Image 1 (spheres, rainbow, N blue to C red):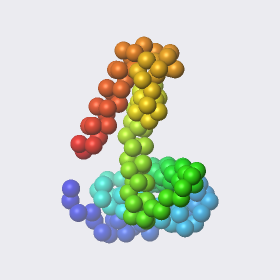
Image 2 (cartoon, rainbow, N blue to C red):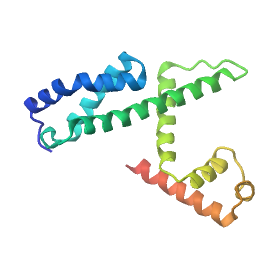
Image 3 (cartoon, helix red, strand yellow):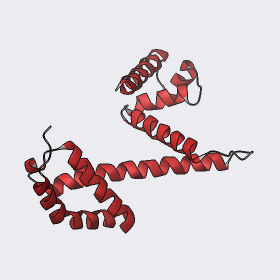
Length: 166
């Protein structure tokens, strides 16, 4: 991929950065997060595409920003769930900031992997792997055969393995 034209990038940034920050602020309710995501959007644009080829800059920028916003919201939800789980522990658990970050990054990666599965496959995979249900119990709970449970577990495991190879 050729290096982006700095002049074209400068024009795109100066013409659309203010609009993008306003667009994000309206959706996030926070100017600081909006500014961060606008900056991340332009960084993503810089590393992914030839700026001169963009025909509808606001549509393209809003699509990138929307995906980044969804990632941010998902990460916040996972972090909140993790903190709530820690708070419910009988004994306090002292986790270093580095370990906490690694745990959160792992949770985000797992969430992304599971997001690529269909709803039934995800339900079956979580019942077997997370809840420890047998194939028979999972099948009874979801009203499917043991063969169907096996098929979906294999599909989910294959999906996760292929993603970890990338």
